[in-house]
Length: 102
Image (cartoon, rainbow, N blue to C red; front, side, top):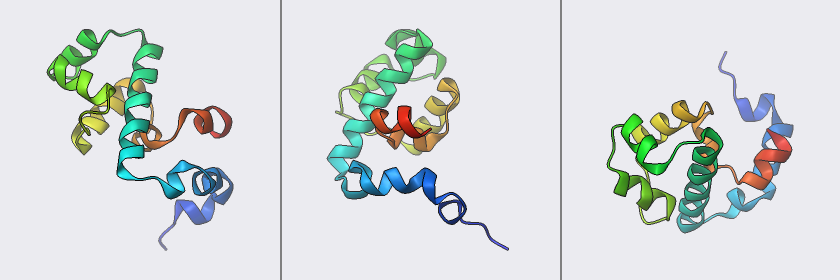
């Protein structure tokens, strides 16, 4: 039997449907990712340079992600989420909702 997390935990994902995620453009999502990368990086106490070195990426690329100029690849999203100790989808979740519902 296949389990659908949206069906099993609808209350957890309801805020997503009612939030910007439910009607977000790609530009909105890039901005959310940028804000989340900055937020989680600051929570870990890492500078852009130190995080870039840990993830084996150019510091300029990380700066472009944080300023919404670049969309990170799925590989980079995975590396960032592991470093931040979060699930990859949390980089797409607006911070105001994350604090309330996660």
